[in-house]
Image 1 (spheres, rainbow, N blue to C red):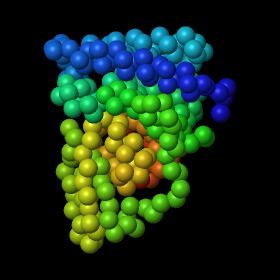
Image 2: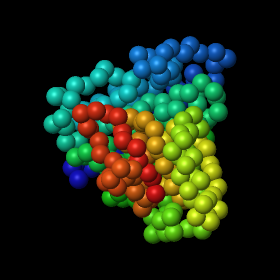
Image 3: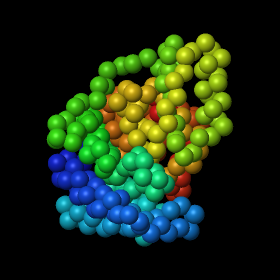
Image 4: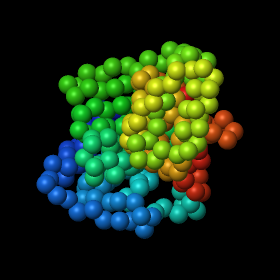
Amino acid sequence: MSAPIDADTLLRILDEASEVILEVYGKDDFNVETKGDSSPLTEADRRANEVIVSRLKEAYPEIPVLSEESKEVPFDERRDWKRFWLVDPVDGTKEFIKRNGEFTVNIALVEDGRPVWGGVARPTEGVIFHGGPEGGSFRREKDGTNVRLDPSDKPHFRELDEVTVVASRSHLSQEVTDLVEELKAQGKKVEFLSAGSSLKLCLVAEGKADVYPRFGPTMEWDTGAAHAVALGAGRQVNRADNGQPLAYNKESLLNPWFIVE
C-alpha cells in the first residue's frame, strides 16, 4: 500500500457530511431535481459532495477524487490513476426522499483497481462502517466506540441449511427472486431481508446476512466503500458471471452483476 491514510480524518469528514445531510433531511420540504439519467438529486447530495471533496483535497491534495456528483472525469485522464478517492455523497437518494433512513455516505480509497479502505456512514443512526482488507473492518457506534466486524471463516451460503438473503428495497430483480426459489427448492430455509443503499453489503459484512446477490445495475461509487468494509470482514464481492473480484476505475463505471458472500 502507498503512504498511509488517517482513518480518524476520514471519519470526521463522514461525520461533517452527515451533519449537512441531516440539516436538509430535517426540513419540512426539500427540492428534488432529476438528473440526465432520470435519477433524483437533492440539496443534500450537493452540499455533502462539496464538504467531502473539499476536505479530501485539503487533507490529501495528491490523491484525485472521483465523485458521482462532481464533473465527469474522462477515462483518458483517470486511466493512469493508481490511487484515488471514490465518493457517493448520498447513496440511496430514493430512500432519503422516502425518509426511511436507509441512505448512506460512501468514501472509498481505491488502489490499482481494488478498494483498500472504505467508510460507510448512516447519518440517521450515527453509525459508520469503516476499514478494509489490510487492517480489518469496524462498526463505529454513535458513542464513538468501535466494534470489530468478525473476519473469521464462515461457511459459504450454499453450504448452510438456513440462509439470510439481503436485497435492494428499491430494485428487486426477477433473478434475485429466482435465486431465493432455487435455495428453497434445495430444502434450505431462506430468510429475506430488504435494505436500501450500500447497507446491504454492510449487513453481509456484519454477519447479519449470508449473501447479497445484485443482479441489476449499480455504479462503482455505489459499492466501493462497502466493498472495502466487506473485504476487511472476511467477505468477498465477486462478479456473478466469472467469480472474479469486482474491479474499479474501468472505462465504464457501471458494475457488472455481482454477489457479496
